[in-house]
Length: 616
Image (cartoon, rainbow, N blue to C red; front, side):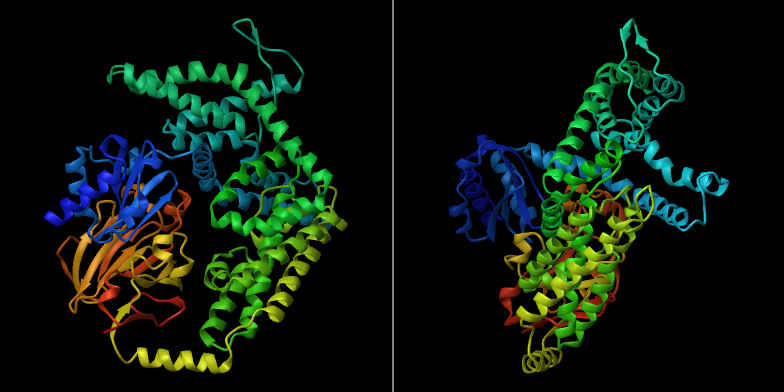
């Protein structure tokens, strides 16, 4: 263990000394330092040390990548520096922008599915009315409209729950605050144009139905009030005094100050976007069509979600959604071209499934599996999205409710006045986006030739007959490791392998062997085969921050396992709702001990089907 202590001393020295360290914890592969001043750290020197794979500075963290031995090095680092062991729950988000994106994702992710469903129902009703099958006076319409519109009208109540949960408050207090904003008697007073005072202070009455920003700010204030009273109230009465004080203070404050200020801010935000849109509708939508997928790659698209909802609430329409639709079909066109040109049957299979998924708005398989690794087709997809955006802008196409993705977003683009030319602009724009990306990819992207394809098939056939096989530990879509949005994995620094976009939340042993390490956060597991091949299965990206939530391990360190034996269960949907990418790298961490590690499968794979060969 002396080697770990020596390495720990070197690490502490070159991160600027123990006085420069605010906190440190580790995940499956790396030490994650939060430093007071990153300029004092010497990343270059650390990268040269034996035992350190690389150094990554990202998200306000100074990450020292160790590999499988990270628990031992971490223990020595804590001892050398005299640091407190740090839970991932205590990790601070760095930077105002990073924190803002994290908050937005945490609040809106849980409700996007129901919101899309409600929007689709509103679109369906618009279609039925447009074709004269229903009228707004019919009882059937009234009932279905109530089902479709309830989420949007009571949005403050629903956001009160998710926002309070994100801020660490009581979700039900958040719901009550939201309910107060749309309480019938107050809505009636506001609707009748009457005045209202609270302790002789005039209340600025506004409509908070479908509003976004007021309830988010109110629940944030409430979470701070709850924290204060939880700390200063005896536990015997805390359960009811804290909620009472939160409601007593926050609800009036919201009506008197938070609500009006936030509403004016919402209107300003919507008016600002409208101003930019009116300057040039074609440029505005074309920009979204071109760069939406790039925003998705970096998680920055969450910053636009509240703007979309706010536009719908304040202006009654939104055009960002139109750009998203065009971006989607730009990628569909590019991946369709790859599929048509491909000689490799596995590429054709992946392309076909990715094209179908893209039509329905799921572009990740197309993007990460096909267009991004080939680079040019991804750019051509962006160009197609921009071209479609130009068409949408020229036709004045807009969305009038939150809908689904892909073709499921079309129904919400029917104007309240009925089907018109702007609505048809959605179809024309989709066609243009698809055709532009398709033609550019067909003409300028050189897919593998038949000879190259045959050579690959021969090489794969040989690899399947030699070496040590590693089976897929999960069911899902096999993608190239280079597409993983974490440079430690995608660069091959940890070793060679593949990644799987899981479709089921279960991890199985990829071979007969032994459990080397089950990480405390349960998001990663290390195994060693009976022949010495070491594999790391890392479920999701940055999921160490969940601190074991949504994961259940069924094996322990040192346990012998057989191929196909269950190792971990995890909740894919819950992890995704928290804003984490569930793509799972499968890495041969001692790659340098072998001649090569070759992927042997692409496309959809069942658990325990061969995906890698370790060439001895």
